[in-house]
Length: 283
Image 1 (cartoon, rainbow, N blue to C red):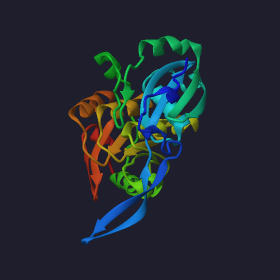
Image 2: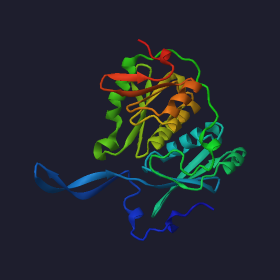
Image 3: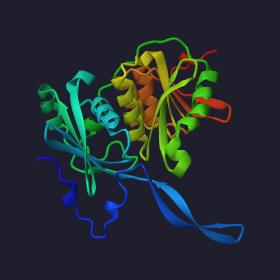
Image 4: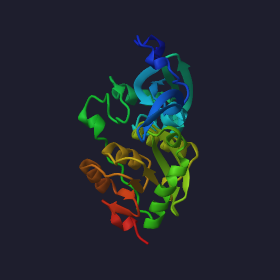
């Protein structure tokens, strides 16, 4: 049976506050230059989002309640729970009083894989591996990235510089990560936001797959550090390059090097650092 989030223990009623919308308005006091005033502020929402496959609960993630069908598809692909977008038959977003459930219909052939990959914990905000119960489930099989034409450094800088114009939630409330997909000239074609950096990337990948975008035709940019889970997600769909505004982890660099992904970090303020496969970044 699907998880009924209305049965979750919530004695303070915290989960019932505005979960259905990505932004919540509330009164707050601001201090500036020694004086204070009360004003209406916007904060970004996060809520429990349960993903249920063919009626069987799989995981509960903390996420921003927007673009949830993209999230479910991207998560299903990057966690390798389904073989291809065609295995993702449909998704229905059901909103309860204390959270959201995404009821996903998948090809019956994928049920066995999902049954062996069940998560037992809630995925916390920004956590890509919460609930996985073995090292092999975390460190997945590498997906080699095919060679591709070089991408100019100016295109990477342009993409990250213009990504801010697509961050409507962050502009309103802050505290939100973004993932963007850019064409080779640096034009942002798609962007998704979420309080969790992994969620934002999954949402972006889901949106790309729904539109049938060819992964080698562009590159991904993210407003966070580059963790190994994000590198793995990028390689699953064959993205040739992942650029982050912050630095990478050592494991992220090793995974990117082995998979053939160009990993770029600290891409901001007119500079960037290429950690792997620098031949793909050229004027």
